[in-house]
Length: 84
Image (cartoon, rainbow, N blue to C red; front, side, top):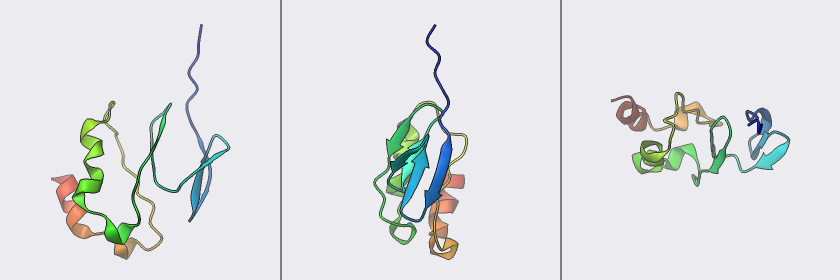
C-alpha cells in the first residue's frame, strides 16, 4: 500500500522556506502533502487579489500564515476582508 507522508517545515529565513529539507522561495501555500508556489512580492504590496487562490484550492485551508518581517507593514484592510 502506498503511504503519503505529511510535509514538514524544516527551516526558514527571510529569503526561503525549507520543507522536508528542500528549499523553496519564501512565499508558498503549504498543504499536508503538497507545496504551491505563491507569487507575492512582500507584505506592503499585498492586495485582496493575492488571496483569491484561497477560494479555489481544495481542501480549504484551516489557517493562512503569512510571514512578514515587519508586521506593521501588513495591510489591515486585507485582514478585515479575509475575516468578513
